Image (tube, rainbow, N blue to C red):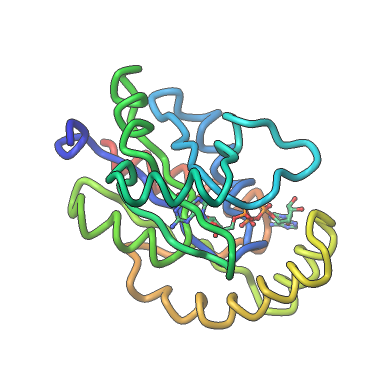
Length: 190
Ligand code: ADP
Ligand code: 5GP
């Protein structure tokens, strides 16, 4: 993989902790990074665009990618919903002269960290409390009650992984979380 010698950022957290919000900020501050657009078999949400948030594919297409070695990593993050990073996506970012930023679940994040070692900075975004996570997920209003319950159930387990990450950013006040994340990335890339 061409990017093995380049640096990259991994952002992981339970759904609703603020990953997407923080990643968007980092991408504005650091033009040298490119967002790794994952493939997913979950349904597209209102406001999302194919190729921007995700490459939206069918379950069959996703399983074809698994079988044919097209994915750097993948997880069935929620029952019936696959998410994965295509090898071609990492190559696309490198070809643009950029370093990748991955927004992936905790297991995927730790798998990528194992692949890239010191060249990867794995950041865990932590909500101030489980109750705040639920409030944020509800106010985002992008999930059905069923999908929300799946996310909340999984969040309890995901929150136990924080110690395995290089650093933890508590996303309580957004401006403070932004500043902390920017400083971490700045120090990491030198
Ligand atoms: P994730 O990508 O981790 O699922 P999002 O970035 O979509 O999380 O954030 C979930 C919701 O919480 C969004 O509606 C977002 O605007 C809001 N949010 C994110 N960070 C904060 C914060 N520090 N304070 C209040 N609301 C926040
Ligand atoms: P959402 O459905 O809210 O966009 O994302 C659900 C979860 O899937 C989030 O935790 C997100 O980080 C994770 N995710 C997104 N893309 C990938 C990926 O390529 N690989 C893995 N392992 N997880 C991903």
